[in-house]
Length: 175
Image (cartoon, rainbow, N blue to C red; front, top):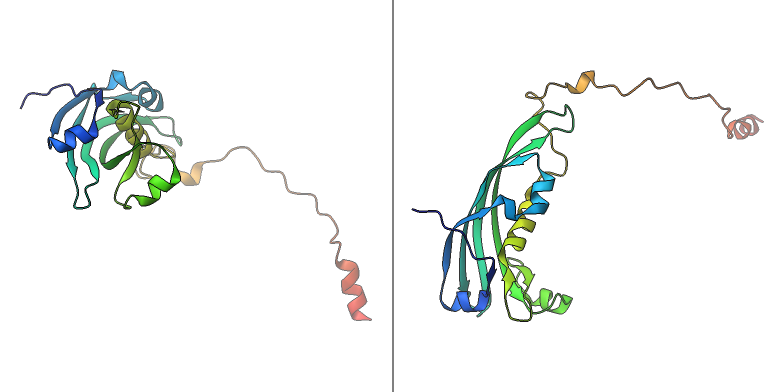
């Protein structure tokens, strides 16, 4: 199958009515925030998106994204490979009011549409990829050059021993 570039703006309601399916790629160069969060990323992000309506008549779109990235280990400062494999399920809402979000089933993540009823698909998927990155990028301990037991960050001076302020109470108890 030929890899095609996905549309940037989509109308989820219209696509759900048509039961549209998209299989293609998003160029990683079109995701500047993700590029800033990783050391390196594959040229393309493989994406599958399916638009549909559920039994309640709610519009939703779900799919899968995959790409390979490289992150910098916070322990040893070496680059390591980290594959991203993300599943998502969104439902479009008119505004980000809490009442609208409370009406959605927990399965769907709300995504706000603009005045024309469209969403920026690239930005929404970029957000999801950023959220799937680890909070602290670390190798597996057995693969990391910097071993946990050998880490030291300077010499810790012993704390001054101050007299216990409750020592006076101890003497009163003896009387």
